[in-house]
Image (cartoon, rainbow, N blue to C red; front, side, top):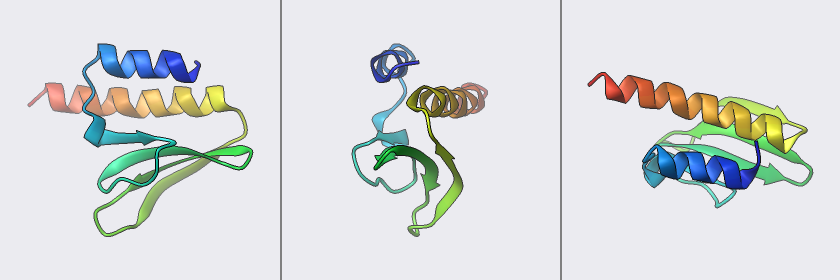
Length: 81
């Protein structure tokens, strides 16, 4: 998946922007995906500044796919409420 495709999916599924950051810096209590030189880093940045569930990707497509899978899980959880 490309970055544009990911952004479209996020928009089409009405994912709140407060849930994530796509290469736009750190955001507390959010899923972060950013490019660190030539690798993509994924993690959850908690309210205390801890990086949890860290994962690194060499290919951006893999990072975007993984990010989307994590967002889908969050959506499934919140739809049950």
